[in-house]
Length: 128
Image 1 (cartoon, rainbow, N blue to C red):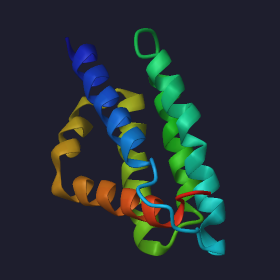
Image 2 (spheres, helix red, strand yellow):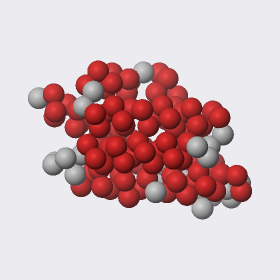
Image 3 (cartoon, rainbow, N blue to C red):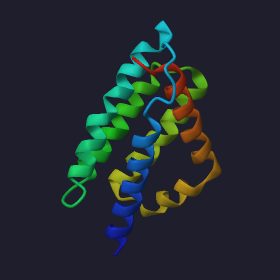
Image 4 (tube, rainbow, N blue to C red):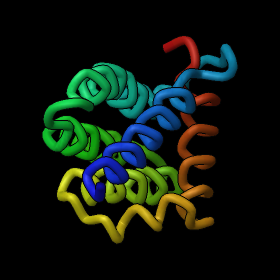
């Protein structure tokens, strides 16, 4: 039963991020954000992989998503970097099977991180 809950929460988190990483506007990305945006685009394949492996072994896919988020964070402004790393830490925890980390999904700081990340992606990565 615990595995089912972990899987459900993980898929919910994957779905939420997949929706939020879709650009909301058609602004032109700043030159400094191009590497970040490129790394964020790489998340699409990771999300698809996680969805495909949901029934069997999603652990590797979630680890891969966390790694891609950490990679993107290196090229992000400080506020976005902190938010991206927070999101990555949740994916890492889900991948490791840490059930206690799932309570962080409803934490207001996690919600703020998702908002910060998705807003920056929408404003800086649209059309790139």
